[in-house]
View: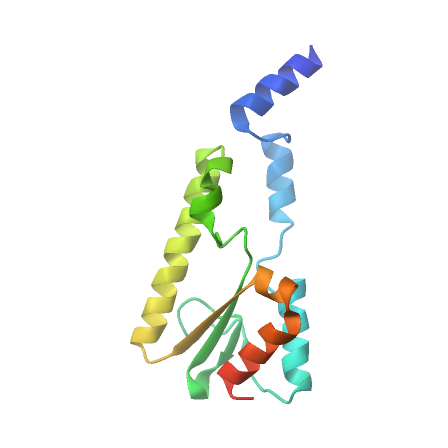
Length: 147
């Protein structure tokens, strides 16, 4: 009976966890100061770069900001920010994930456009870029920030 209930739940929701357990898992995921971010922050500081993290003085709270130069860097995770989402949208079985990721992508585009309209330069770095070639990604950020 338990297996039948489990399979029915899995078919219906597309998830192997209960709503309560999934909520617990997802709430444990950090929104800022992720491993990628803190490692990049450290590398930039070692290079002598002075910047603000998660700056609330502009829309979108960029991960790395130099307000005097109007430079903003966002470090986006592939899943949460929907890198190539149109290619894998079919795997988001529940409408919740489709709405969530679509809303994140829409917000990201709005924030980038808004900052650029305010005269800011914006750089978005993807998680997969950091995983593939960290040195090149950090170099790109340094050049963008003028370090």
